[in-house]
Amino acid sequence: MIGFLGGFLGGLLGVGGGFVMIPLLVLWAKIDQRHANATSLVAIIPIAIAAVPIYYFQKGTPQVDFRLAIFLVIGSVFGAYLGARALKSIPERPLRYVVAAVMVLVGIRQIVLP
Image 1 (cartoon, rainbow, N blue to C red):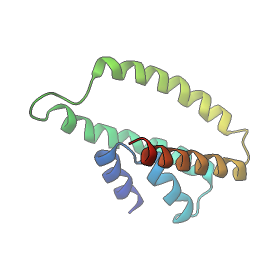
Image 2: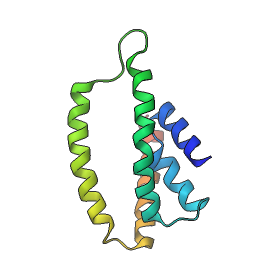
Image 3: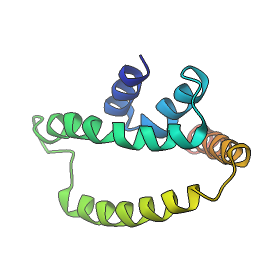
């Protein structure tokens, strides 16, 4: 169910791992925050592979900008590497607070500045 919700919302809204799978893995599957973060990153790969062709091969103008995406990929790879390294040094409780704070801030921003 967690995978289905993550995939569905990932394809529909562009969110899935960080905003759906991680909280559900922590709350429903009872795994620690660190493992939830790492597990959701692996699960995002097939979600993206499944959704990209639908966005790209739709009628009209494709919704995927591969020129922009390559820069996002490069930055994401380096950022993910540094973030994963940093994750190893953050204790579980503060990590949960950081994840929750980011989610709340993004939610507030979506409401105030849609």
